[in-house]
Image (cartoon, rainbow, N blue to C red; front, side, top):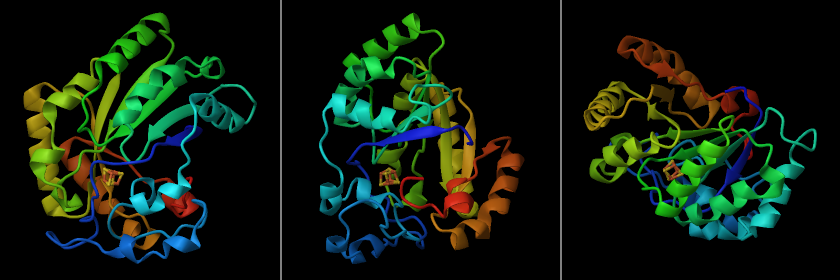
Length: 261
Ligand code: SF4
């Protein structure tokens, strides 16, 4: 948090997470009620108070907002956002949707691009269900060996039952253990109530049993401020109680979670 970051948002996800902000077992309908034809860009898209708050990055109905770009064009667009025209302290966050779907095949070319040479920190924001392809593994391995001053982080937002996704699909210990071979990895659970914290504990136990050693964060549910402020302090106290870390949602108080923040 607080690090100047450029977000590269890939399109598509293997989940829908319609359970967030809903009573257990119920699915949010909010994303289906958005008048899609009114929006030709991400700017101004409505925020939702239930379900996935980045719905437009994977719902097929919003695909027209995410153009298919060449690696050169992506590198240009990313570097156009650098405030000094060169990489300094800026961090590249590759997010989604789920950025470790088929897009994995484009990352070696993107990260090797001449314009990306000064980049020192990369984070993949993933739901922790996707194995790394052999090609990406070999690339990350070589990349770390050659560039010891570069850091790769996997921020794993594993989905608990409150997301509406099934445990067996969402909690994949062997997969996230593999991420730790190629960089720093930590877990981040979005929670709203006591049951979610119990579920987080159960998931952490499974991950630890498989050998995962990274830190664990709790983050309050709440894509809109009115929901977020209801439980952020309680969640921070729960994190303390379990010996875990607390992750705020800085984009909510600072930018009201607007798209592109
Ligand atoms: S995994 Fe993330 S991007 Fe995908 S539906 Fe769930 S919250 Fe949204």
